[in-house]
Image (tube, rainbow, N blue to C red; front, side, top):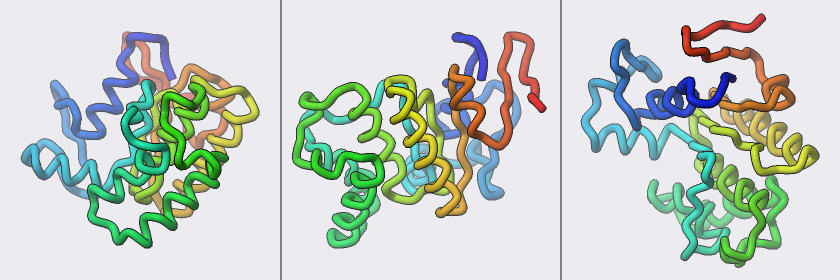
Length: 187
């Protein structure tokens, strides 16, 4: 948690290897991300990270199902397995009937759920979520947070949630607050 501009999104980008830290190191499963080449970082992100961006980054020329399937396609996952996982994730986020829809036909909340399904479909080891409930009504936000928690637990993964919402923050195991002076741990 933290005020706008204190570096919450930047922290997620550093953890994901999208940005290089000015000081220090980022280790994931014993691997220092700073020691990886660009190609290795891309492979690491593709295989290990599920990223829910604030701005969705849903591709407008792909259907909802194709957007969700994209990480599996990039990993070369068998098409039958991909179909099953896409169906499972679309059901989990309440969009089972929207698979053939184009993004322009969806509301902001539905687009956010597509982004979440896409981030979880390949069962990543680390889920990074930047304001994943920012465009959702309270009931849907609760459902999505529950889904994120369940998926992270089922896949023995870890998750980092960036949020301004105290309600969303109350669902996590530990809250860290970023301030201009640094990081504090909330008890």
